[in-house]
Length: 444
Image (cartoon, rainbow, N blue to C red):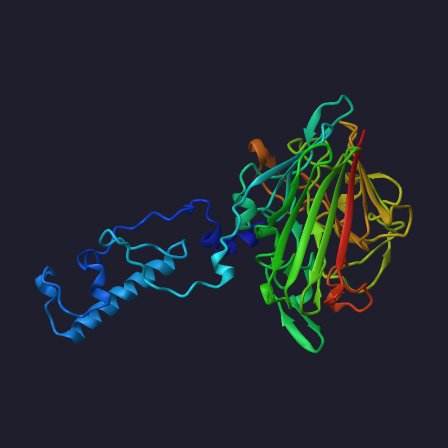
């Protein structure tokens, strides 16, 4: 689900300006401007030349007013470029406040800072971040009860923010997967999106939901730990129509299960919405090499075949008798050489076994640790991706992630559904609510 990571690099400039961890929380006061130091506070109220003013200021009023204007402009500029809404410019004991209209609320509320959070119920331990509402580490026991971290990720939050992460662990949106040529029409209007995976748009654009800092709406520790992240996606963001309020809630269930509930509400315009959880799994441990020895079963008897640019042709292809057939459990590496580049395909999920309105999506087994992951969800499709584009990425603890170091099972609306009438619609209207729930159930 990811093209060459290099393609992402040139987007990093979108983030540093507002999200740099080096920005001080409280502004340091600059040295006062020498001219302002010499002006007593009443200088702005009365135009009589003060006897103590330096000789340079004993000039005709027009020039003096120009000088004042220059000082005012300089002060305004300092204030505008400062991280605080208003800087006090020190003059006499009384601080001189240069009046400024308050900035709009969107500017005033500084974004939350990037942080890690932990959920632990004594059986499993999950680390998350508010950057992209991402899972950065997930520890579950093997057959001997030894905890191991089974997701690819980074120790630092920088790669999650600056676009060098290949979507490790994050929630992708506003629309997951690819949109052909970065265009779609809705209610007679054509929308042009950021093309970040030429010639297409991938996972929401160059700054999708994965690279934004979400707010923490609630955080419960204790026996049933959970955390809810919120993100407000603005009208026009990456080219998409309308404001959307998004929530992602992770909770640990009494069994060794992680539950994810994603919700999104379009506030004022119809818009496509399709979120996906993009964790890369390696059940032998994130630093154990490739996943080709894992076995997988996928409850999908058809895939949506794709063209050269990974856009579905609109057809549905039965998997039986092809290397895409995982209706019965099979080793990932057994036929991967017959699929050019590796697996990166959308499976149409069958309405098979259902549990609390969630379908059984897939079962992944690692023979070395005996860890098993069962995924349940209520989305129509799942992208099975075998980390084909990973190349020498330095991850947690210095681990090197190469090709096939992890696998993704991204439940989703179908790729390019917004341009493909034969696919289930991903359009959500104001008054409706997008919902997408997933269960990650671990056992041995």
